[in-house]
Image 1 (cartoon, rainbow, N blue to C red):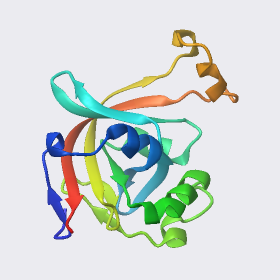
Image 2: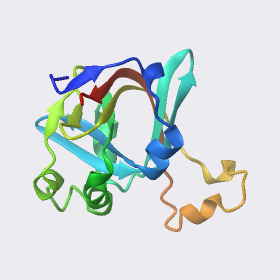
Image 3: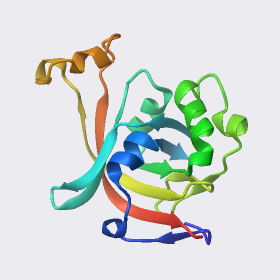
Image 4: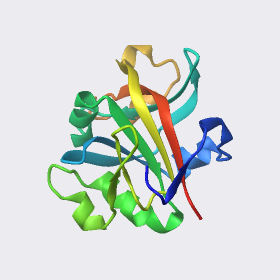
Length: 171
């Protein structure tokens, strides 16, 4: 990626994925250096599927990032130190249709080895190549209460990406 990051194998990560995604949050980013968007997410996962190291994330069709996810083969998940929580909050509450999130937050876009976009300030970057997507169907919800996450009936699209790069910020 650049000299501030080192590539590692995903299985060498010592992170707790529940804390990493659910508590610390992440930026999902898709597009290219000329035009991209990023959004904060706290739903997703990491694992093995189809004999591949994968991640999954979900994006509502109403989000500006959705269009970029649809058009891009590559997306990234970027994780930050606690000091960036306000940046993540901003990127999750404002739309890239209405505001330049990069100018507003001061984070620095960088291109990953595979052509994705991440941020110089990230502490961990996971780069993925889309291998599957599926729209979540409310008639498939088996647990009571899931539907309450969808007051506007704006059901997520789930993207599964094969992890093609994993980068830790050097100390």
